[in-house]
Image (cartoon, rainbow, N blue to C red; front, top):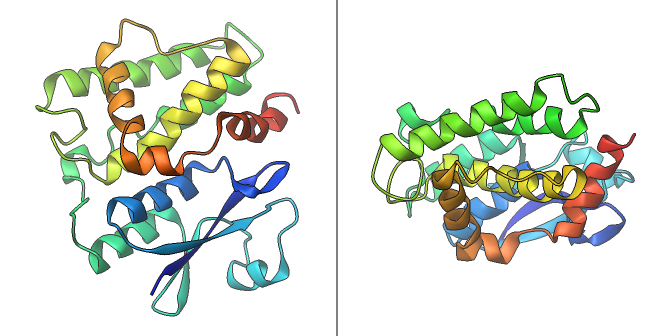
Amino acid sequence: MALEVCVKAAVGAPHEFGDCPFSHRVVLTLEEKSVPYKMHLIDVSHKPQWFLDISPQGKVPVLKIDGKWVPDSDVIVDILEEKYPEPPLKTPPQFASVGSKIFSTFGTFLKSKDSNDNSEQALLHELEALEQHLKTHHDGPFIAGERVTAVDLSLAPKLYHLEVALGHFKSWSVPSSLPDVHDYMKALFSRASFEKTKPEEKYIISGWAPKVNP
């Protein structure tokens, strides 16, 4: 039986998958594990009552598993790993926090109106740390080596947001001095699971627009 998952609908397009990297992470995990699922697209600016009944804080994603609705992508991914162990996606603990500050530094830089506030440098610092890890810590295209793991499925949507939103709003892209990061992004974005589930670029842009130009 298919699992049910509530995810964010696109801004201005309630029948399309939207710009929530945490929703995308859960859907990628379901795809990688070949678990059948049914997506409920939630218009977060007009949340239906039935959704608020199962997610009182109004947050996505929420997954229905064993008759219970479970919030929080970290918790959901852990439950999926336990219940559907094949293929294993658990990240070795020493690699679990690689890239963990990229999304927050990206958001700060994207919304910044002051070119001297060091927000670009903070993001570059995190991307350089990822470059260093990819260069030195293992063999293979992914953070833990040859095999994709949970940390990659968490980073893939965030790096996609970074590429699309910074390209659109700031004409900024990951520097060519970080070739391993570029290769890593290519490896993630070319996976069948990502190709199948990625939101259209225009929906990433429409999702960020109100935050960039409030």
